[in-house]
Image (tube, rainbow, N blue to C red; front, side, top):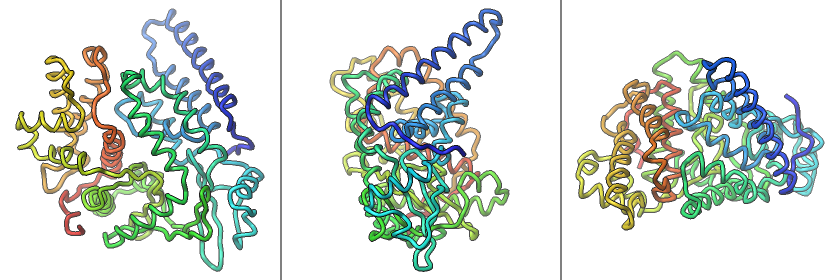
Length: 435
């Protein structure tokens, strides 16, 4: 794969890159409408493919939060056209890496020494490049190590990157700018945390120690003396990405074993620790030769406050969900409804969120749930399509719900998709034996 010798770190350079991407997209639309004039039956597939390619190509050279947003969107499989999902999913663990000279220069800047001065061996060619950093193989005193290096300028460009992405997000998610600041602050705060590698090492150690007793789950060891604010050194873990395992595995028992470990890991964090690994994409998990699940990235951890946890999970109980008075009380607590809403708005959003909570809580209604259940996935897809095209919703303010919904919804949506890809059946309450 072609390497990158320079990343634009200043606001002008990064804005210029996005502007040039916008020009390309404009050209794609002109090409599309020109062809459609001669062929009215032409679909948007080619346009989506061209736009997705140009947007991804622009973002991958910028790295950082702009690319991270693309990665997050790739998990919204029912929100975006397939071409975008396919292209943006490359941001999970397959983007052009930094060149060897830039790696050495970056390492020296962050750690005060070149990599060959700190490790016995260090491979300047990365083995895994993602949105915020890339990973290199190294050895020291007989230990095989993975060294994660943050891209230059990522932490400093988060606010300006989000300001550039904001108009697109407002339009895509039907948000009103004046009321949406809490959501952007939530994303900005989490992205800033992801660039703080000292915090990531701390979170990694805390969660891996707290979850060490869960079967079929493994974690690397972290080395604080070889880590810094922009560098993390941990054990090298042998295994294949969860997505590769899911594609090649045909053994139902193994799928269930890995899926159960994944489910128990997430439920233990949520219900036991009141915090959760809120970045459940396949690039953050490996499966080893013994079919153990390995969690390798703890940069994005979402704290779950009690005043959100209690109303949110109380609605997984269908008796509560179908109790109109109880349901309305929880909608106010979760900031889905507010006192200024008209009767029409109350009726519309309570019906909408009742449908959404019904869908989200479906796995909780049985002792054992099959994540390949076509009825469940059809319901999920239809619900997404229904509200993404609903003209009534577009006339209303889409700013609904506590800021905590952002990463909790992302967590469950990502988790359900991973379990679906695995074709796993899991025991829903099994995690309680580990609390």
